[in-house]
Image 1 (spheres, rainbow, N blue to C red):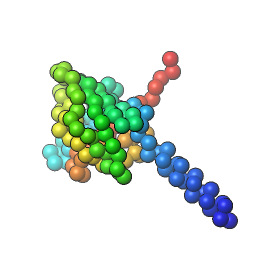
Image 2: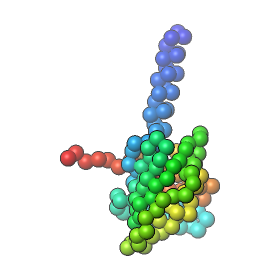
Image 3: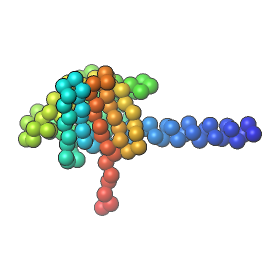
Image 4: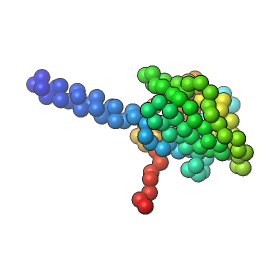
Length: 137
């Protein structure tokens, strides 16, 4: 009986770790909600992305950005300043999204729900990303 219980616990722990891995996935930004301003920005393309490696992240919207991060519990902490390219956004929604990213990416809470990654800042600003499905070549 103990052996069966131990196997069950180990499988659940492994399953939880698999669900909460945000690394090595291309995340596509689809929506930003700002409860302070009662504003929602919806993006209808797949070029605003975020990608995490072991200790670095990179992203792209109108501009490319990158830096270092660490995870502590459900906190995602972006370390130091972002390295950012300097391009202008042509679409108003992209410009708003860039403004939110540059302003709010410092320390955020995160959770993974199915194929979505939700980053939140103080319960006021929410970034919703979806896992990018790579098409067969």
